[in-house]
Image 1 (tube, rainbow, N blue to C red):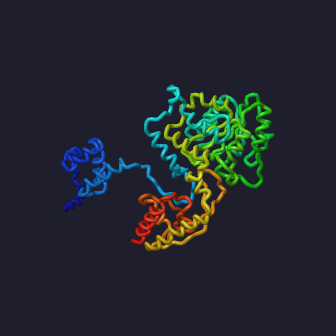
Image 2: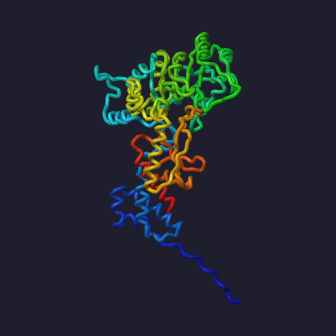
Image 3: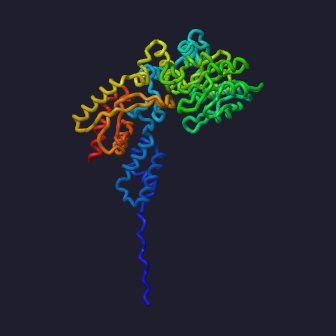
Length: 450
């Protein structure tokens, strides 16, 4: 009986060796620009891709060049925030003012970061912002670290390590990145004592929990959520009376740090009336760079500044330069030049005029839009129930595809979907970005029509 041979499978495409390719004249320019090791790595990755895809290698050079370029293209890119979230954590929270941006160029070179120009002796970097902070907020002393979580950690470690800190169960918050207040407490070496319930904690609950080992009462402002309904919480004034009677500290983690009354957000000034130590973020309602601001009584702030952990969480020169400029603007009455101040206080009529202007210009380019009454959010874990009235520009078309096309624009525009419409919010678009945004919207709308 005749045997039928199985058909032979297709043979794999023969691919050249990486060592052979890297020495070809076509790749010489890439080697000069990126170095031999990186080119070899890119070629190896491309050969592996061709093997998997069965490609013929006709676009090999272009693909290798693209891989190399992608590796050195900056990942941090400018975007236009048209989402309507003023303090958008994913977009870097508060945008800096022009004065703060200009100050970065001073810090980028040599500066008197830790040099007293009067005496010629070594200076303290913290003094660059401390005087402005004490003048602005009227407190005894001030310090700056790299973020508010670090400020709370330093306060608890320097002032409460090995002792008890009393906090309400309703204030055991979790901030971005799954970082929880109990975690901060544990890292500090302080022992957390929970009092009250999730929705009701009275001053008496704190007082009943105080022992000879108690170092402080801690108030954590629930800035990124609200508990409503059957609730009760001790005021800072009540906590201050308890702390004073028993000779313990009162520490307030304000989080957002409102410099003036807005919504139901507690202000820094109100907190300083009662507390020994107050901490908050520099890149939220203050409108500056990421930093942890520490204000309070001289004895407590000095002890924190001298603790070894202070060096590990100290702030860098670029942050100090931007923070100093931001504080100066507030202190000299030029807060209106800080972007988030304009965004938070822009009248809805101004927002409407801006949206209408965009609509007219886009109509001239064949892009159909409509105006929509809505609201913006403060964001950044601040004022979760405080809505800012706004007027959105809705771009007519498939919402999800338009949002994606805008996000891939040059520069990317971050929009949002509301009621199945792709919407851009003028409230959070910086001054001077209007024409660029209109161009990106036009290109995105055209790409959807194709």
